[in-house]
Length: 458
Image 1 (cartoon, rainbow, N blue to C red):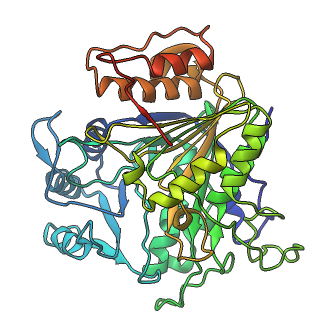
Image 2 (cartoon, rainbow, N blue to C red; image 1 turned 135 degrees about the vertical axis):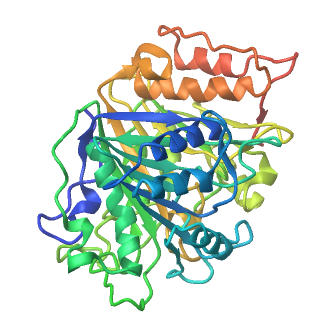
Image 3 (cartoon, helix red, strand yellow; image 1 turned 180 degrees about the horizontal axis):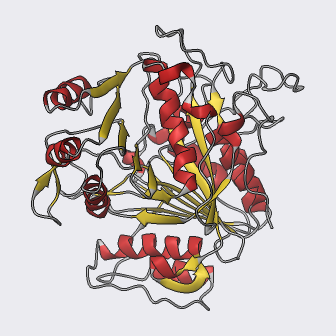
């Protein structure tokens, strides 16, 4: 079996938890905002005394309709209902930016009796915490959500966004929680002085999937709470490291569903290239860091089929850098399939990587990081704070609507089906386990109304 995950941290070191892998009971996938919001509302309705609800966002809207599945319920209704049942509610947002007045949202939350609502503004003013996550500890279960979905207006309609959020259920949720708790403790010191990152995980609760959580952080500034990060002080790049390792390990296919898809530029640099103490200052970087651009080119040259779906050129943060990446990857005997969704349709906001999904040894990464420099490295511009999860699966794709194929392949087909359904609502993907990847690419691009449903990156 392929070793997809980053190697374990040094036993007893402060960053050991950053590299931990655990088995977990279940993973659910949300490929549209409404199903995700319905799930959040349903879990909030179960939260009561001794339960925790912890929401972390880049954009947020306190006064929005969250769900109509249980009657018309606003987010504030759901939060106040849980508070009335004595659940603990926390809200942690990055500083205000052009897309979200988070200072106002925190003030609105406090007015709504969510007293534990804070702005995390510890990064450089030119960057932000881009993480979109939620954690629920209920009476008999734990749930951690991670991906590209913020709880905010403007995501569901007119025309809406393509996006993906993963729900990790079981022990993996408690591991993922540590990333959020570390940020919280940098603002409010932990009760009793023991960091949640150093607490033991509860006993196992199933082994359907194995997970590892990863992050991007720039160098941390001096904070005002006496909180000290004793590792990766020059920036954390576990997200980059995990993607680097997975691209290098892929043998058959890589699917990327991505908002920007542009060159990441230079790889991060090591401050102590020969290794040294444990934990190393950049213990999350490979010994010889390389750009993801180069690693993807290497994968193509060894026969790996690369398929990418992104926004059109104008949807990239820097269109000329999209051009650079496309020209780097094009050509040769194994040309990649580089597609763009129509500009008049939904906006592509996903951040998903799927590796070798036609095998029993597949790997998936879902999170908040885009394929561009600020999401992956603090070289040059300041990095954003990102959060993602990588996972392997023992179970098949039944829960995703495709039996007797890998969970990862069923996920890709679910995503491709919803892309076609955006242009043809009556469409259903033919679940044929004998189909090859080439067959599935042909199905993806089968004309709708006489035209290719995608354009090709030039």
